[in-house]
Amino acid sequence: MRSSSTRAARAALATTSAAALALTLAACGASNETGGGSGGGSTGGSTSGGEMAGGDMASTINGAGASTQQAAFQAWSVNFQQADGTTVNYDPVGSGSGREQFLSGGVDFAGSDAYMDEDELAQADERCTDGAIDLPVYVSPIAIAYNLEGVDDLQLTADVLAGIMAQQITTWDDPAIAELNPDADLPSQPIVPVNRSDDSGTTENFTEYLDAAAPDAWTFGVVETWPVPGGEAAQGTSGVVQAISNGQGTIGYADASQVEASDLSAASVQVGGEYVGPTPEAAAAILDNSTRVEGRPEGDIAIDLDRTTEEAGTYPIVLVSYQIACKGYEDPAVGEAVAAFIGYVASEEGQQAAADQAGSAPISETLRSDIMSSLELVTGS
Image 1 (cartoon, rainbow, N blue to C red):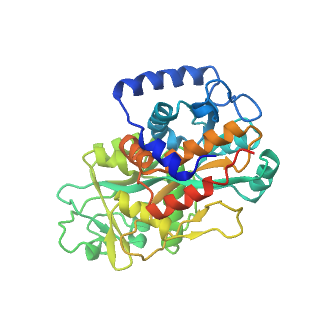
Image 2: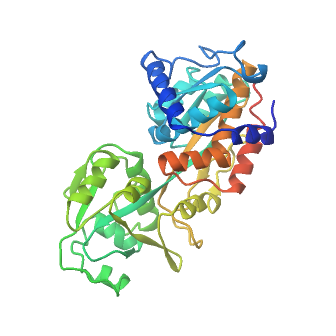
Image 3: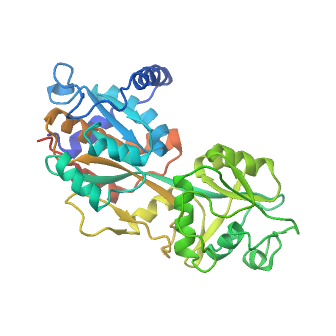
C-alpha cells in the first residue's frame, strides 16, 4: 500500500474550485437519492477494477454516519476525487446508524461522534478481517454565545455557566457574574438561556462539560435532550443562533463557526488561571491534552476528553468526531482507497479544507502523525 507520506503528497495536489464543487455535490446528491450513500461496502457494492486510480484503488467507496461531518465532506469528497479519481459517497444518517451500517458491512467506513464501545469492537472483529479502528479527524468548538448590549467581553467559570443554564442565576448583574467581570457594565436584566429543542450531539457534549467541570451546579447529567424546563428552545444550531440574535439578554451554546458568522459575542471560560475562548487552536489542543483510552485495538485512537483540563490555551467545550475503518478488507482495493481518503482528511490540506468549509478546528501535527501511522494498518488484506 502507499506510505503515509505518499498519501499526503497526493492530498497536497487537491485544490477546490467553485465550479467543481457545485458539479460534484450535484452528482453526489443524485447518487444519494438512489441509495449510493449507504448501499455499498466491501461486501456489498464498492467498485474496484478498471477505474482504479493507479490501478490499486477502488473507484468508489461509501460511508455513512455523523451529520456533524457533512459540511466537511462536501469539500473532502471533491478534493479527493480530483486528486485520486476515487468517488467518496457519504450518507449523514447519524452516528449510531453509521456505525450500524459499517458493522453490518453495508458501508466501507463510518463517521461517528463517539468511538466504538466494547460490543461494537467485538462486532468489528467479525465484520473486518483484522478488526477496526477509530480515528479522530474532526474537531468542532462549541461557543457560549450571548447577546447583551454593551458587553463584548464576558468571562465565565464552569460553575457560573452551569448556574445560568440551570436557571439558578437569573439576572445579568448577579454578584456571581459581576465578580468575574469587574470591568463590564452588567445590566439588571433577566437572563434568557437558549437551548436546543431537538436531540443533539452538541447538547450531549455541552452537558458533558457541565457535568464534569461543575457537578455541584449542574445536576442533570450528560444528556442529548435538554433537561431544564423553561428558557427558550430552538431547532438546530441555526435556530439557536437566530434565537440568541433576536433576543435580548440571551445566552446559549452553538457551533462556533455559526456563532462567528453572526454578530454574536462568545464568552471565554476559565481554564486553570486564565480564560479561554473557542478558537480553533484552543479547541484542537484538548485532543493533545486528554487521555487516550487504554485497552483498545492496535492503531485505535479513542480519546476521553479532559473537560476539567487546566492546560493553558485549551478550550474544553468541543465536539470530536471520528472516522471508523477496518484494519483489513476482503477487497484490497477498498482498503487502499479508504486508507488514502482518511489520510487526505487528516492531512494539513484536508483539515484546512474542513476548516474553510465547516469552521472546524484543524488537528495538531502530533495527532496527524499518529493517525498516519494507524492508517498503515489499513492494509486491505
